[in-house]
Image 1 (cartoon, rainbow, N blue to C red):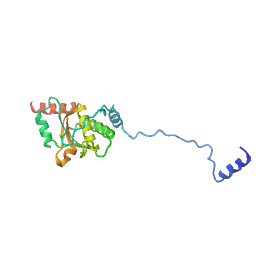
Image 2 (image 1 turned 180 degrees about the vertical axis):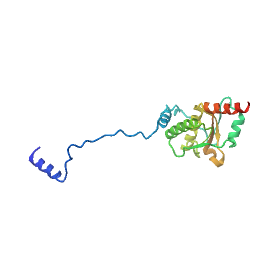
Image 3 (image 1 turned 90 degrees about the horizontal axis):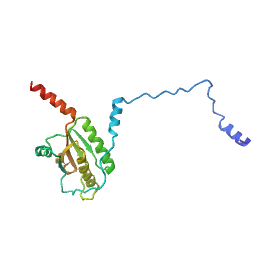
Image 4 (image 1 turned 30 degrees about the vertical axis):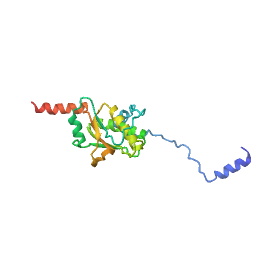
Length: 190
């Protein structure tokens, strides 16, 4: 460092007070703000998202979304279609990209299953043209819902819940719900 640089440095540092000697900086470990059960739940939700984004057969706007899994009675689909299973939770996918919708739907179904929810409402939107973005998301939602083994059936929602721009979904009972149901009915039969 030459004299000119040294003078410049001293002028720049003229109003700076040196640190007192002997003081130590103590670094504390951050306290855990998230409990372990929440961390385990977050880990479980980070599972590999198996929903595919490959080839998509676009469902025409005038064709209603509908699916009934193998072994599911027609009466279940009829009740679902008439809104007899009120939605316990809903997911809004309006104006979201396909990838954001894919991630949100995956998390939503896993969370619903973890909370033993059976009846869901998914709002996906409805486009006027077959190639419109809302209809693409709608077609992907139909494709993705079939890929979940938890999904028993789905159909378009009633006009009060979104009509052609939404669908009702019913999930299988979880193992815990089956055990609770068995215990409740076993107590009655004694």
